[in-house]
Image: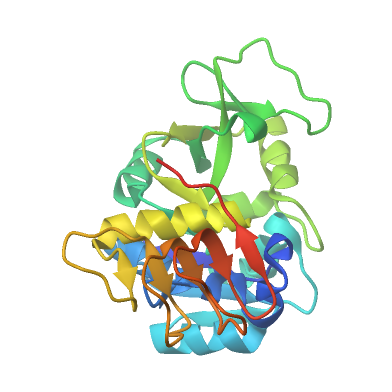
Length: 296
């Protein structure tokens, strides 16, 4: 069975401005590697025959990373949304038995091999990764894991609901899912709903036990960076630290002269001001200093 991997990279990253006015969100680095590269490496285990990424905001940054990673890029003249982007790529995706659509602005530990295996062994048109975030749990799932609909979308209610999940931004589709997508600016929920009304099966796999970080906010960015530090065992990236210390400092900008005693600090751009010793729980850039909350 052939597989294509489609990484979504077109968004503006509105909640991380002004950083994302200069740095595309999937290009944000963690331990010196962009989120796009980190996700590409996670997907590599599936050995996709085709790699594709969409671009719009700061496309030259995404294209440069994709060129190095041998990923074909597809420019969107306008943001097409989570559903419209699939229709825009349909002429490429239709040549593969299955395709993975994966947000490039995630940091996670979801087992993609297991997810794909469950997709292949099922009769599902689509297999969605589900996580649990109470404020965003909108996927209504019955006791068998079958998607019933989306709360808050087209007035949906269901007496068959067994649990609710948040969509993790990761999904496998059979190529005939393309029969349910429409061109133009569109939300993926529209396509799911169209397929469900036609009697197709969409399943949601519980991935809540895995780490999952959407770094769309400063706090989310900190949580993702902290997870990557713990994963790599590097707690002072480009920052002097003693063996065994865990300062949780990531000096992605390579700023010189950082003082001792920093704790839970991310430096994404050269900061023009004086950074005092003992600074903690903050993300720094040229024109921002975002306070964060320490996480356990």
